Image (tube, rainbow over all chains, first blue to last red; front, side, top):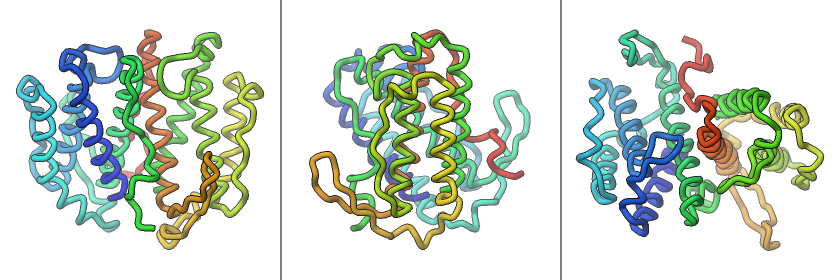
Length: 159
Length: 159
């Protein structure tokens, strides 16, 4: 599980760096599909991981902060770093005995739902990779090379 | 690991079903980004998983078959089912002792590279999810609702 989180964090960092070479107007432009703009997608990736893992840590699920406060590559980078510092210890301490623990959460319709911890961990992983795929299409539509999605050749595994 | 493969197989099936409601011209249309058309992307997802897992099974990595032979939803569905039957036993039999085994493979430039088995397994997982993200953008660009990427609420975990 941890290796896939490390992959996501590495790719996310590369998308932040990719943003440095793009005009902010392009990053804020409303695009078709996905959560909207490139900036909002990156903000949303961080926020989603942070809120679910916070809940798995037994704390109240945080409210989504106002996106307007996080416009700018460095602001999203800092937000990601702050969230990461809070949730990484949980992910590094993950072991298979936590798989079947249950999280109860109230959905948007106010109904209570129950999830296995292992289900939430994988949901968060797949969620971020899915959004990277969306960013890659927008990047090509802008005529720019996207961040590679390859998990191999990233130095994530000792060999 | 298995749960993420099961997620991919379920979402892949839903994309095949989604294709049933789309005109074949649209499915074959060359799009910006990703591997090209929607059909080719689905074919590529199947082929990538099949070739890497075949190699992990200790067999020679298969050559990519001609895409022209797999044009049509049912043909790609059948191809996916045939590949799945060959590779699923390996994935169901996966255990953590296999993580550090080494696969040596010759890349496109003819150089030999070594990968951990665990690295290839996660590469295959991330690869498919990434392409689903791309399909979701193209789907919205066509004015159609994409297959949901949510991993939760799919019945993958007993609760």
